[in-house]
Length: 428
Image 1 (cartoon, one colour):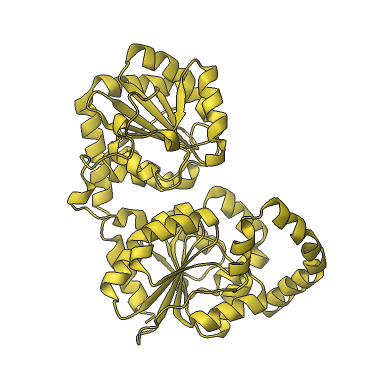
Image 2: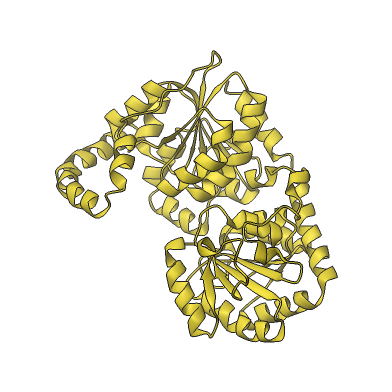
């Protein structure tokens, strides 16, 4: 442990002159990063009121992790009103989403510190956390070692290990094992994730399987599908909305090729493509046009639009979940190409019948459970995708039945937040 910390900081010292030399050029190319960098170095940290019970510091890397953290932040504010909640994110997009989603439930939203020893020490001193909670990922040696040295327990929640991550952890086990051992407890999403951690050499005493925080979403009336959609034309009764979430290069071609025939047979079908990287939105508009479609950007539509083209490209952050609420069919991207897939729980929560391809390795346990509950379809290729979608378009009762099964699967795991709160209380 000691040697790893020394080696890590020695490498930082050796590389520092080069990084300082390159920094002005980076900031000239990305002027918007200047303020963000200053904050990540500890400048202008916001003031917030410390409650007598102490401070809980929650960290989420970016957009996906912020979404996962929402039920936890909401529950902590409700159950532990005497504590100060500080929430950090690493990326600018994550911070923007956190300000909108997490802001009402926490006392401050701050940038995550750069993992430079003096910077990390400054953050820990100013925040003075009683507990540090990391959501899913973003492991940094100096922060974890300093938290441990300061006597601050670190807790991982919603932990998961993809096949790709597992290969990296095994290859660089001398680095990752001491890092993971800085946590007092690692709470994993599935038994498979817990078993993977054990194979890495983490003691079973440090591991718990608590489920996925996205299963902890509220089941109240505000989840009804009649809530207004941000783009009203997509919510018209005569529209049938297919939302393709977190798509990757190569998948959009398959989907658009299928939709060329699908839309010609069913004029009411509208497809919303949400690329995993929203900076590809312009590229996808051109791709859709190459297939003969008129396509529009989600951000450019207004409620006054008289019509919506058959393809909408989602170029905004944080709106995919809202679109799943109104979707008639959901496709989970990263699965028709070998990208490991993405989390289907958001679509399941909104009663969507779900399709995904054969490459769901990163969510294999959820995939298997959804298939076993008959709340999803696995398709092998574009032809199978088109065949299943055609069937669902023709059979609204089947759509509702499969969607209900997916939602029931989620509902049965709704005690996830209770387990997390009980665990967190053990450290306070």
